[in-house]
Length: 118
Image (cartoon, rainbow, N blue to C red; front, top):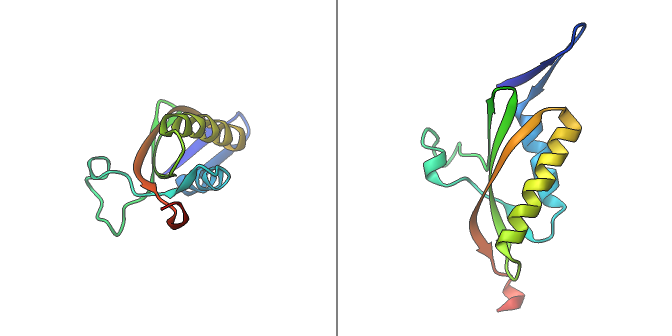
């Protein structure tokens, strides 16, 4: 699905893949996040493990609702990481695409334990 933004003279189509790429790049910049991970099964009932994606995007009333699955690095406060990520994702997508982001739901699916920390 693409989101369309229109003015009186032009239109712009932005693919959901663009939003996924922006989210992925934001996550790479945050050291407390190990990686994206597939969303919990309850959020992706119609997908198989092979087609599951870590970023789910839904467009509701000209705004985007985004669900993200992540793995957090050990020794970080999960609540702080999630709140920081919500703000960073929302700001990046709105700044780069002009699409209003009304929700960013974060699902922490695991904690990564570095073998050096054992």
